[in-house]
Length: 249
Image (cartoon, rainbow, N blue to C red):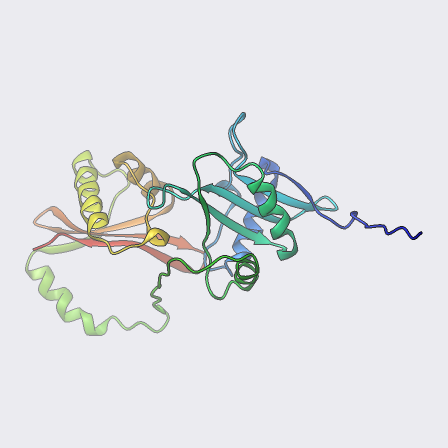
């Protein structure tokens, strides 16, 4: 009779995310998105005590090598959980299985969000039987070659017509924040989107907090009234444009 043995000492240890993992997870997630977005430890929090962990990590020889988060997708797809993964692709399957073993009631499907050039996630999703449900496209502007000269004439005409752009002061009066939020709501309602591009819902105070904390908001006033908004988020050497909302004429 022969006896087969199966070694398990090479398998990672799976456990809930802890606050001390934040720096390692921030690095893995930033690397996973190829540096298109820069994450810091402050972006990652432990699940409250007594609740299901939404983020797990895979640890090998005391080092966090991969992470996966499974949490409600949001209002756009209320019956789905969103799966985000980063790090060592060999750990993706055990991380997903660990999450699925404790999946909360009321959810019928898992949605992964990735880009075509995020190879390890794309390979895993294909092997695991995921299918493409929605797709979105991004626009990129190379500011190192951007020439503002063709727009100077238009800028001058708008100025003469009473339009003045400015960066919104974080200590702007309450009336400005009211106008900003009304403009934000108008834009969100009119914004083409699918579940992969649904913005996080923001309250008036939530919008003000995110602008004060991590964004730069620029507005255009016409005779003192805010009529246009764009929100920019600096990420290393790049800038994300969150919204560009003009009021309708």
